[in-house]
Length: 232
Image 1 (cartoon, helix red, strand yellow):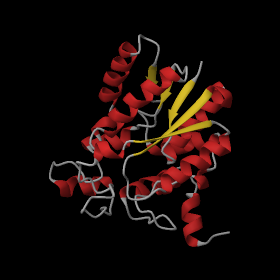
Image 2: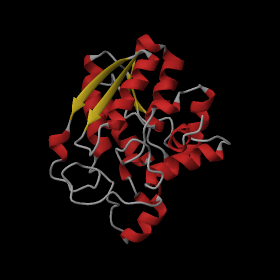
Image 3: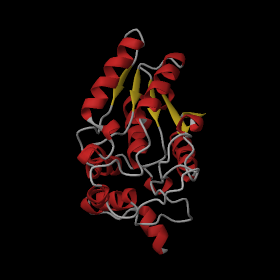
Image 4: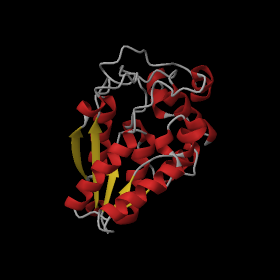
């Protein structure tokens, strides 16, 4: 059995990669990273570091042109600032509208692309790191269990029943993901989640807040927080 892992370089996807390597062995795992026109390349650099650590093949693809029509605040051409504060506060302020960090149907595009590449690389499973915190409040609808089931069915049928999706965290919280990664001794210091592309994580954007809280729930400190504070 061979597995293609969507690898962004963040906590969720890196934990997926660690799980895939642990279960199937590094020679049966391929990682796929996608550039989508984001404002910085820190997460892509982290994906390379994580893939190198686990000694798996990493494929990189540029899908930026497809998102060139969107004004999502994560994109380099956007005139919107990246919001600060938790996702809960952003949802309340958005008054029912999509939060500005939602990239239109990004997971749908990533999974469709991954299905094609999986067939070419003789992979039968696609792993990706969608989890329940991201789908809560419809912040990121392409992370929901319903979306995952629909995409899995489409890809399974569209691949001639050769490829299926596994989203191991779709009904889990981020703290559960971090717990699993800690059990697997995943080097989280190699990962990057922050929406800002500065030297250190900002600690103020939604993904930083969620990430740091997940470590705290597990009685640990996010290694990126330690680096930001200059802890030894």
